[in-house]
Length: 172
Image 1 (tube, rainbow, N blue to C red):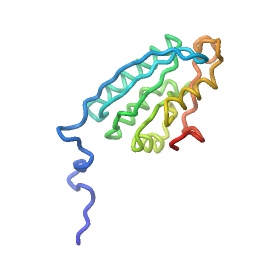
Image 2: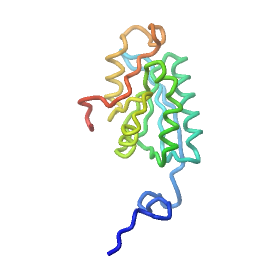
Image 3: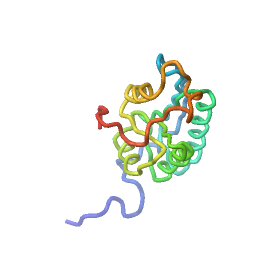
Image 4: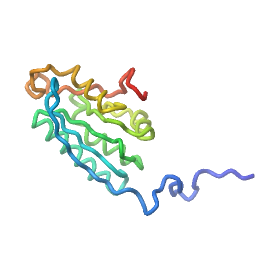
């Protein structure tokens, strides 16, 4: 019996392709106020990030992070309904969070699917910190932020978690 590599023609496996093509990329920003933490701004991502839209995703994420910083909010990225289809998708996250990484901060990335979590962990992006749940991301931010002091007023800017998985976080 002959064994073949998964698609020698370079095309993705049929198991990885959604009927009718990849899911369209949809982005939505949700602003909330949490006691003890202050404002948070969650960019909810749904669909497939691939080579055709990675730059758009990167620009939208960079804008989200910048706007949250200007508003004194904690930015979060929800990837619970997203699929990173290629290396361009992972690089788009690196581009968007590069400024955070250069200042020793990181963006909290929430609820990624297992393949996304593995890709982000393998990539070792310094500008992100992956959390299995929104609650764990908020707990991490709360433990770093004084209850009465807005994040942008503290020395060093907003409190962002280091770029690594959270030990003891459910789902790790």
